[in-house]
Amino acid sequence: MKLSNKMKCLIATAVSVCFLNTASASIETKDWHNIASPKAQQFMQDNMAVDFYAAPFGTGWDQNREVTNYIDLAHSRGISGASITLGSPATPNWAKYKAELAKWTEAVQESNAKIRFVKEPEDFVKAQQNGEYAVMWNSQTTMMLEGDVSRVKEMADDGIKVMQLVYNGVELTGVGGVSALTGDKSGLTQYGKEVIDEMVKHGITVDMSHHGYQTTVDITDYMKDKHPGVPAIYSHSPLASTYGCEPHETLTETEKRMAEKGYKKGDPFYRLSACYRLISDEQALTVKEMGGMISITATEWMMDGVWPEDITPKQFAEMIDGAVKVVGIEHVGIGTDDMMTTSKVVGFAKANADVYTDNGYMIDAFNRGATGCAEMSKHLAAVIDELWKMGYSNEDMRKIMGENLVRVYKKSWK
Image (cartoon, rainbow, N blue to C red; front, side):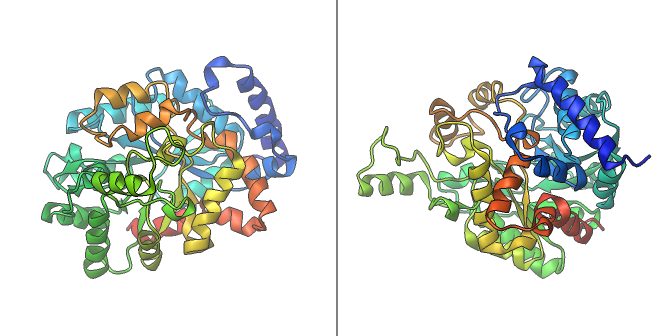
């Protein structure tokens, strides 16, 4: 049954009040929703809004109620659904991947929101129209394949619709962003090309967030040659040019640049490493040429503690605007990469130091005050207000909030 806008608004108001008074639903991210204009809050209810978040079991959550609280709050405020990460360094093999899939599937189905598991791009649209919450699975690694490309088909059958070839380190498929920091200039492997072939064949979008620079060049060159017309994406990668960052430096090059500028540890502009989670204009424009897009994350610690406090809606809007100025409104979306809670992330990063050999970059950001992960339901309405102030139209907002993603998925989910 399709809910009327009035009914959706009444339900949203009631549930929002409930969650604002439920301690377990309040994660670290500051809640900006109720400072947003009623017009912006209603715009969320009336239009599709799609997120991307990454909270593996045991890292972002360990109780089903944490997932249900998160989804129910998002749904009540007009978030139509999200791409949820199943594959991460926490799932380095097939057995752990399957266990993660079972954990997440069980948890989301305990939500008060009616869940629509995404099989086609139109499912995001239908979820918004029917008052449902769309769940799409993604993977930020190919480690679980354990060298067996035939498993790509099974992942597609499981509902994985977006996948990175590699996380931060070195995988059988190629080199990730952190390994590139240490000077590894190699990129996509032959096995990685075979994985891409299977992903394209079975309708899984190629995602290049976290990848080393050379790996992204090799992927886009290969796809343009072997799979013309199939777009790739960056699911959660802000543009370095928005901050004047150097995203592709090695640790040695960053250390040299800091010395040349006379910066020392403790100085406001001192950097332990390059902003390796961010991408260059060149990378963004290449994806644009392929018909793809980039989704902007506002997870503060990825920006090396640029802000010593929780990110504001205005800062979030400026990040989106910075990307639009480079690639245009048709190629930008939002992917918060929210971890649900940062309280478990630090412990996970320390316990998996071999995955985050970034010269202390991420832990330093937490030590310097990085807190929340820009939870979309707590930010988006206020971000809409800020983008309206910048001159963005309602049509622009609909594209950024989800229409661009759906368009790209239609091209790659074949």
